[in-house]
Image (cartoon, rainbow, N blue to C red; front, side, top):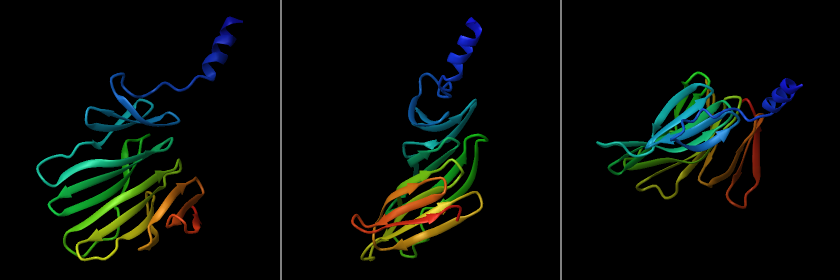
Length: 195
């Protein structure tokens, strides 16, 4: 009788953490974790640990670092930025923590043709089926207002879902639906997934 009770207690227990004892957990979803050791960002799932990048800018220029990160039960989404003299660019990546592979990468927005451009990610989310969604903002010297773009990235596709000069906010990504809002008081929009 002692054995069945012990097994019942273990069956409902939370999965063991894949984060090393001295590291700091930053995000958790199911058994997956994003954590930092010093200035390095990692993702893990089970026994596999994957280096995602650095949290502090590298030198010499352009300085590169992870600015944003998001997590689902299997996938991590990261926003890697490069800061140069009068430029700021951003690239997003979808990482499968089960295999450690970076399965998709894309620029945060469509290219800016003007010099002294600034491209960044304002919000991002990833779901358990392998879709990474983000809102990118693009501006440049001499451009009167920024352009906002909502993207959805999978292993095989990068889709621009919405774009314009009205800020895109309230990003929400579910297994079968991507939703957002145009402006703080604007209507809620949504599209079914996969795209």
